[in-house]
Image 1 (cartoon, helix red, strand yellow):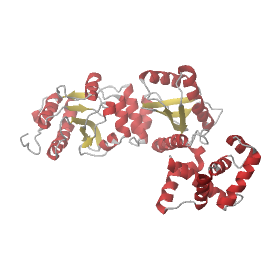
Image 2 (cartoon, helix red, strand yellow):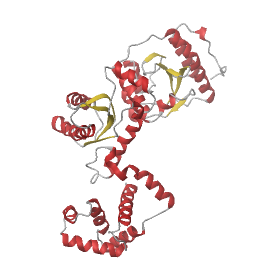
Image 3 (spheres, helix red, strand yellow):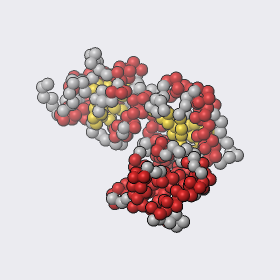
Image 4 (cartoon, one colour):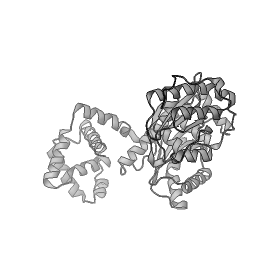
Length: 413
């Protein structure tokens, strides 16, 4: 390819966005798409049969598919585009039909007003080609102001807005204005809920989920998005008689039950973050809800009853505490002794100890959980204290044992 000047663009060269995009495509030798901030296609260059499914779908529907937008948000691509004026390379994601790309944001002052996407067909763009793309974005700013026509927001834009809200890219005023625009009043006592599904959410499942969200009582769903195995909701309580916490916990319990009963969708569980009043806390609330899901996945027994972030207790800090333990190279000597004894004698004393502490030291509940007689449990506990040389009646020792047992399980999973 012949060497190109560092900036081969002049505004007066173009009589339309189409001529601009075709010129960029010619300079880079690859297909180009120009999109607005809602990922709706404004114009696109021609391409041969060597393109990817996402580009074809985007051109047909005039908008990037929702599953692709969600994935780009989750992978940090769009947040990066909202912060950088430099071209960003996106690795191909074959599972969603996305080939390798380079994207650059078009900025007007401190606001992103569009994107240019270049598909890398046979080889990666060179450093000089990346410079050309960056220069194209600078000229594109003026051309968008000159040629682009304003389009009425679609329902898909609500999901784009929700992802921006979830990732902290919307200020409070903008969020409140958007909620009013979609006929949602200002939110009080809201939370973010996350439900995880065993199977990837299909189009048919999506219809069924949306139906249930509209008919469920006591909880108002202002925004939602679905991504692979996850459903994410911005929820507020309608029922004034019960506290928001009671309403949200009932919803976390009832929604999976309704999915199973009405549509035979099973193996769904959920959690929600803390309850907030300020929309600036949405991003933090999402992280809390995901922490509930993570704990329930790793501890399906004892964490089954957890619904809210506040329910987690010490589980909120498991990853931080484990990292500290690993950095310090610390191992609980008492637990090591018991593991070694179990291995050499083919016993289950460590499991017995954990069950005993899980059940708040209730002999009856522990024996029932382990399917053993209370006399057998008494004997096991006696052997445990002898082997470990730990006094379970001392709260500090007991708490440390319980914490290290959970950290051991967290690490193993």
